[in-house]
Length: 372
Image 1 (cartoon, rainbow, N blue to C red):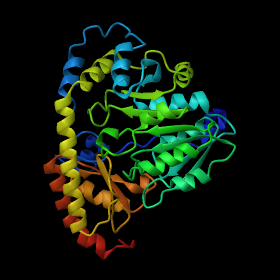
Image 2: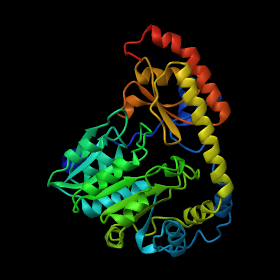
Image 3: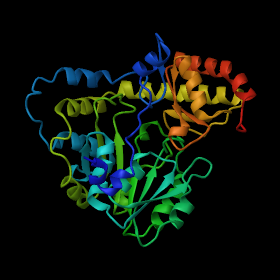
């Protein structure tokens, strides 16, 4: 049977999501005993201890959870002056993105987004029969003027990834405020802030726009700062009318009881949160200084990762570092050729990364086909 012919045409255009190289895959490929994973923007400190304890204490896994999660939704929304009616939970923020598309986007619509950006934005656009309108980054950041110019009567939504993945850059608050104010009222504004906790204090606060501009949704996750990537928990804030409609396409019991308990406990783990942000800031400063010393250009980062240019093809640099037991992400796979996307690690891991770059750079520059 020819299953491809039976598939919906948009599905035929897609490829499966490509996750980064795992530790086990790296060990097998080069027969390594030890691997440093700096490829998936996870928390190198591990998980919130309070979250782990909360999951370990779950004794009713044989029962379905309360599918409404009112206490957790209240805990998430109250610090921003929002209500549970403004809050939706997901199996990671990726699921909320898909709920948004299934609810609001369809054939004939256009969705404006940066290029490159997170790969699920164009993928979800295509799978719902719409057209992604890709606007190239300018100096590694969203070109808000060009994105506004790309809005047409067919535009259903504009997506802002702040900080952007894979470039780690953030939008400038004043420029974004003007951009949001000029968008037509019938264009939905989707703000992905998966790395919001790592951003500078003066950055865009997406929830402000949920309160001030109708048709705005902001999503966040506990996969990054709180170290719960494997648990899968994300959340979003929007008008009650938007949330009510998205609830119609949400899979029942999409958030497990262990995930909900972990999320609630993590929100109260101020010590873990503070220590993680401090270590990330220190690691970022160390790596940015090292890249300057090594004459390697890097985009300014507002996240827990950095995009740095290499003087050879990104895939070649990725492979050379992998042989040394360091897993990073090749920009060739992310729409950012000649760049590596590198997670900020533990201090010792950052030092080993810099030492590996120092060892590889002379050979890279000898064979460099790309100006750096």
